[in-house]
Image 1 (cartoon, rainbow, N blue to C red):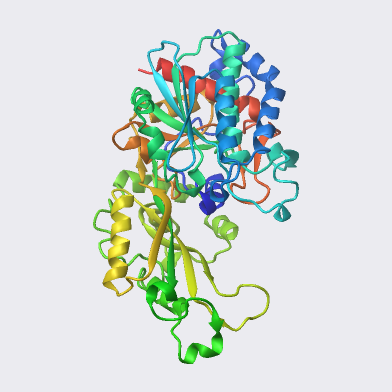
Image 2: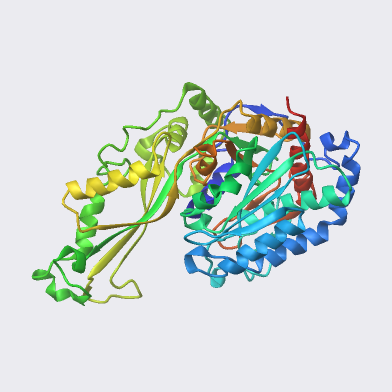
Length: 514
């Protein structure tokens, strides 16, 4: 799941902003044992094994948090891949291999029990950067902290994004094996270490011949995802926006005007400024209010939301608390003073051009009278169906050239296309059926405004459904004090053992689907 958006997405999902109308089992609570598994002959043994293995699961997560793989810093990447491979083998995967790429490696493995159906599972082993000074406890310690309204949680970088829910899925495999139960489906595991930098080489992992052959056998693939809010509700997502992360760079060296390095600001009267050059280039990318992309041809392939998708969003708006959303975001108005439902429709439908950061010259305390020789804008471009990353990159370059900014560099660090999955796909139907069996309220969400590399799976040559699944709770992705719930004090929200059992339930439900 991506970056700076994650904290925003987490807040929205916790409060129902991104949820649609379809809801199953509303108001039901998580019980122990979970109702569907309680009805099966193997369920009691699996739960007993999950409970017996809980401390090992907690240790597994804490040890994993202690090893941060940060692609942007090239930190512990080989070690992270090797550790991920060991975790997979320990959970029962065979033919586990570390898959080289032109960047950081992926990991692949399978469990083949000769079942009729096969499920794909997507993991990421990388995490976002962190500043220990911003945390209330050391970010690699995995300290247990009480979270009011939820319960005892593990705090650490990667706790919820994505190691906590991934560890819960692994715990389900351990519990099924320890219970000597029959695994009901075959499983294909594919992992990457570059999700946090836009998955620039993940396609190389997914299209390696033996990996591709395994993926194409899958009914679908999901990323473990603990999206329960305080009411116990979850989202079933029908897609997500794509993304491109990039830097625009203006420099005296490339421009042929202005200084090649920083000079005294008094010289501005006779020397061109690369920083102003960048500002002018940025102004051409959007309308004057900054709210709509103005790149030529940007909207020509945009697919408008269907009436079904809009109805899901309007129902979410009717059920939501607009005042609370504004308070949580620290805003008083939506773009163009839109109504709540129109703002949510715009959130799902519109592609965006966003400035993540601007860097030029001196940015420390006080002033420093310099004229910078180089200026950088960090951007993310959110894409919607039927835009593609390749199309968007080409149009951005053509736009800058047309407006006379041929010298402004476009350095793309990563990205991928939007993801869409059919509401009647086996994956989505299994998610809904599983949540219903578990007594968990499930809302169909038309489209996440955030991004994940699901398009790697939904597009050719893999061409399978891709989504999110899981119960449990966590928050603070990419932010200080990120956490994942271990011991729930909220009867409607799953702790680690119930989250583990939720994944087990999905496997058995998929095997029984018609």
